[in-house]
Image (tube, rainbow, N blue to C red):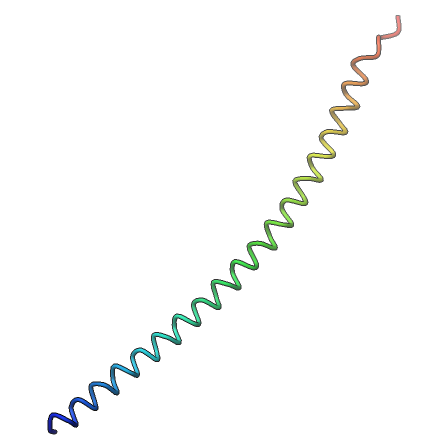
Length: 74
């Protein structure tokens, strides 16, 4: 193998490695975007549930305050 052949092989190996690395990065990026999207959906659902719980708690507290503010009948 002469110098030109070894250089060509070296460049082919390096190019192949970079192509593989580029594919891995692209694949990882796609996976991360999918995971982030799923997390956003989960968070939106959790926030909606917490808001509903807060509304229910607020209504219960309002009823309790109303009940406690009415004087007891002798």
